[in-house]
Image (cartoon, rainbow, N blue to C red):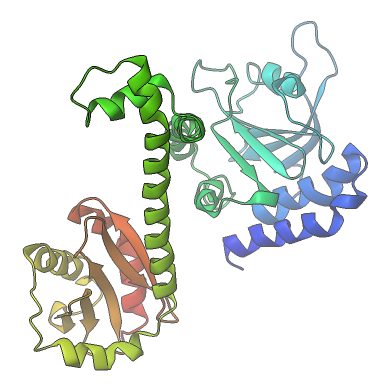
Length: 352
């Protein structure tokens, strides 16, 4: 089963049982243990992997327990404290986690109510749990963009250094997103000054800033709507059948198509990536007005990728086993290397 499917199974289970979870124990049995076992991939029945009611006496605090300790490679790596489903999560609920950070080898702490999972580390001070989580996932309002980050914490993929490197970036990224959300709801004077100052040549009096505030809010919303519409169009194209484009390609072949330098360079990068799996002479570029396609054996039934470079935001389109395209935004052509494994998997489906 794909990892995303495991996550969605837990989402479905929460929907089915959440009205019956009246206690903390019920929450742990119905939701937290399946999360540890099915999502993270640890054997909840093996005390060498999952230790329930973990105890590590700290100072004057004796006999306090953390609900679960997860070990990896023989060392405790994660601590989990569970609360009743629906209970609001606050740092005061994590007092045991906070204390245990200084006396165990754990670098990851999880506070959960079975639906919301908050992930903490010690990014600010070593062996001292941060006050803010670096990652928060709400399974009842799932942000699928966070699923790859969750996968890094699974038994199969766990690499502490990789997790901590991502954690540092995510922590600040999440805080910045919250600031942006606030600015979108109600632009601050600093935001108004920044944006209005770039287009208004007069003196930015308070009256002028007040006039600009609704203009800026409207402009930001319009910009976001345009971005959303672009993404929706991309999502719709994701399910298009590449075989249906055969006629379009033939019609456009002699219709003023201009191949850019970026498309040629992108094509050469793709060939360099897949040459380890296929003779590069079999990799062919076929340009159209709307995109530049890369095919195997010059066969439209063997699409390798598409370069959508005729726009301000460039995309590389990757095909799955069903020949459905997913567009990924790229900032520079070198970002194509980030999809090396995807390209090689696509080639593998065509190599005989």
